[in-house]
Length: 199
Image 1 (cartoon, rainbow, N blue to C red):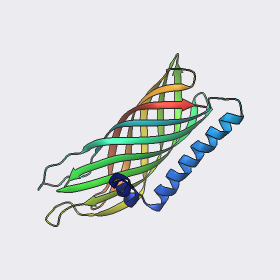
Image 2: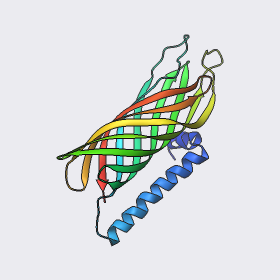
Image 3: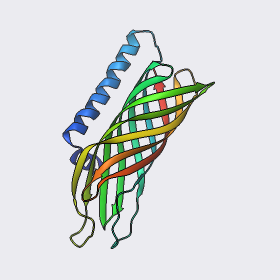
Image 4: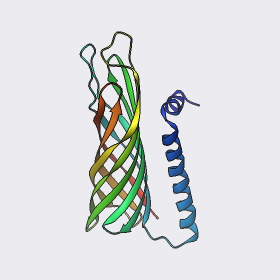
C-alpha cells in the first residue's frame, strides 16, 4: 500500500469508509444492471479533479497555503429531467496551516435541480455533507491539533455539456461547511472539472 493510501485509510472515519464502499458497490451494481437492461441514461457515475480552498483560520505564527488538489467520485440518479439526487465522496486535499497540515475528506448527499438548454445543462445542488478533518501542528503553534467530524450544509452550481448521448463534460463549484478542531465549522470551497457517464 502506498504512503498516500495509508494516509487516506488513517484519516477516513468508519462512516466515510462505509459510505465510500457503498458508493463503489452502488456504481458496480448499476453497471451490472445496465448490461442486462436497456440503457435509460437516468443513472450516472462521475469522476472529477479540481482545486479546494479551505477557510479555517491559519494562525499568525506560520505561513498559510489554503489550496490543494481535490478528487471526487459521484453516483447520481435523475427522477425527472429537472430533478435528481447524488451521493459523492470527495478527497479535498490538505491545507498547510499553523506550521502543519489539515486534511479534509467529505461524503455528500444532495438533491440536484437541472435546466437543460440544448446540449448544455445548468444545475444547482443542495444537501448535507459528513466531513472529517485532521489537523497536525507542532507544539509551538497557535492552531490546535486534533480531529473533527460531523454534518454540515453543502451546495453548489455547475454546468454540463453532452459530448455524446452517454458522456458529459462537467464543471462545478461546491461549498461545504466542515468542522475544524478549535474553530467550529468553516467553509471549504471546491472548483472542479470532470467526466460523467450515463447508463
